[in-house]
Image (cartoon, rainbow, N blue to C red):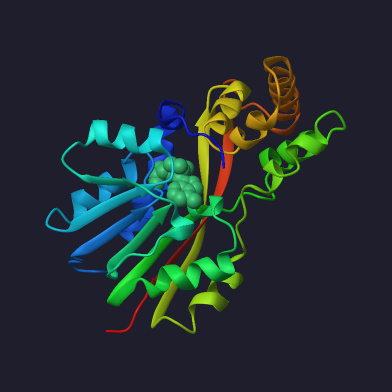
Length: 258
Ligand SMILES: C[S@@+](CC[C@H](N)C(=O)[O-])C[C@H]1O[C@@H](n2cnc3c(N)ncnc32)[C@H](O)[C@@H]1O
């Protein structure tokens, strides 16, 4: 589990929050009273929930103390808790169990997703979004560099840190339990000024587990340099010298019968 840096994460706050907006816009619940935001990070996704349902009782949980501290500082009037999604056992169900860009860090979805759905109240919903970019150049490059001889043993577990199944996997898990399920994927085309910004983007999320297991600054620098060189070959520049960084994401909203 990497250590999170709220400032690094929010460098691309607008781009990272757009999928949270898109997920929320597809939740067809009129007035959920109890809502949980699992892996709330610095509170950007939770703020959307408060904006749509100002009367609801909303809790944001995250395993990173730094993220919860950032959320608490920005939104001191709301409820935040440091907790691990993997061990989350609420005493009462929630009308909406919402999670944007966090469940990919939690393993064993085969067990996890039914547990999360069991904590949805009748008439409520589970709404989740996770990256689905595992065939993309940026992910393939990261894994390729991580398997170079000099650090392959160190990065083996980091390469396993993020796991997301295909839409059919989530359909098979949720459809026997729910009354309706909406599944979709969206590829966001992020517009970045340079290849270095892809590295910056990844420093906020997917690159973290790899850099954290490398023992010293020289090795971290070498890893990032190789990553940047490979990105320059994989993503061509537009005519104006900027680049497009496509990023695919998977969404699911599953409803529980009344
Ligand atoms: C990419 S951020 C998402 C933040 C926010 N939900 C958003 O929409 O931008 C992922 C968050 O998931 C949290 N996280 C990862 N694994 C977790 C776990 N097992 N339990 C709780 N939070 C976790 C991280 O600490 C991080 O804040």
